Image (tube, rainbow, N blue to C red; front, top):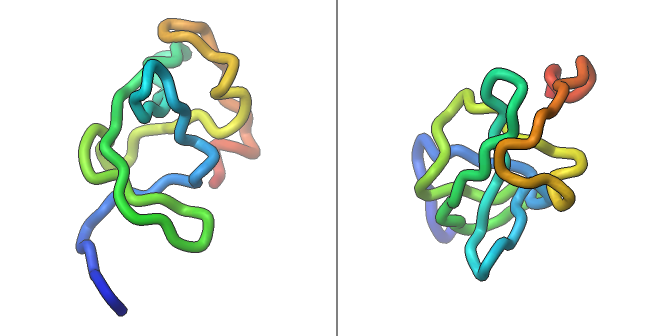
Length: 83
């Protein structure tokens, strides 16, 4: 173990999108996708640490995020909600 980061939020690497040279994720709030800039940390086993910009429990878009724009209407699927 080279480094331990306690209580760090992680997301699948595929959830991270690059927009205007910034790392962003899309979070879901009341059926709307909100673009959220994040500071990423180390990655391991397909997951990436989020150092700033995301709180535990926030729902992140995992499918179709590359085509989304801020404020787009989204629908959460049951299969994705269970992950």
